[in-house]
Image (cartoon, rainbow, N blue to C red):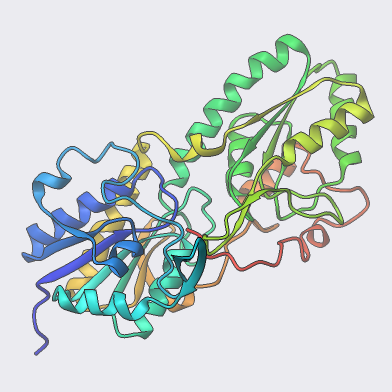
Length: 386
């Protein structure tokens, strides 16, 4: 007979997003209510596990945090235990500190680790599972690009923020007869740009999966003007790129597993539109606003369902799984099947099809079938952030 689960660890890794605290609350309350399990929280994601920084989590610790953004445990998107940055003589070197993580896990007498994060966290967790640490993953990211789940918590909250911003931009665009570009996060996946563009009434939506044709964009703007619509709203995913062109990299962070920081493509597009149409453009980059604030009710519920199910998996010793949402049902998928994969927009997406039916411009060049527009459109990369 397998021994009873008595003590588990939990961490929040990668970029923060609304709903992390809701998951922590659900994990602690379910662990204690249903199973009498103690919970240890690691500070700053995998960094805390590697360096042995942690705190016990009680009912009091998770009281009142359901609606709070961020994470009470802190997080890091640079703490890959297999590629851990260490400062030596004013330069960073990268070491495999996974053995230190295993030692700390065992020294605390933990039976399982629940890792909350995106694809980078899931990749690191799959690696820790191979080293013998029982792991259960909980998927989060505002980008909604995590393989193996229909939706990640954090996405709905970011979508709501983006949609509200686009709504506000409309009045200025109408008043000044301008082309207004709103740039949103999403990295190499266009879910946030596509959904917020449709929800916010955008006229042109540019996503990373389809390299855009600047002439198609300008033609869409001029067509709207000819119909009497003297303004246009363009929603741009930060990973958008022109046909035959590259991503727009704002800066690089060498200590991060994924050094590329995207941003600023909208400024390039705005300059081209002004040059080709003589219509004034303005750019708003939402950036980290999309990560902040209280989670929406949908994210609070999804995060809670994920957290509860994660503890049930642990108690049933169903390790090395990631909690997932399929349709409206909570399920799980082997965490090794998630690592290294990206969930992107495809021509089969219902919302993508809806955007086409609405007559929205997606930057698609004329005369080329839509399916071919998607071919090889996702940049080759090693995305380990999240």
